[in-house]
Image (cartoon, helix red, strand yellow):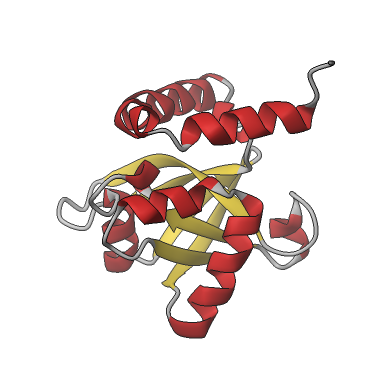
Length: 169
């Protein structure tokens, strides 16, 4: 049987749902993404070869220092490039690979909702908003259709995974 893109995605979804992946990936994936992103002047994000991705630049909640975090995202609207066509909105999910605590970038966005993302080589000023209630429920449903392993991540933790909508300023 030939290897198809769909089979590769399914295999990656299975691997990314494994507990071992949750222990290792947070230390390896972001570092590789940052290095490749820097070397390509913002044009390439390794993890974006499977899922759309941004590099979020936001001030630290406590330090105030600018932090750059590569993140998978879900562009809203039609197709992968929808961030631009819809006026620029994306969903960011604080899954932390299914680990116990919220990822630091979520606290940073709560403290400093005005941030910047690098999207396909373009630096875009954005404002973030934590989703709640029915709006969060609808986003969660869309995210599960987009990347089913998020359900596994949520099942591993007692906390509610944070979901942010970021929009162009």
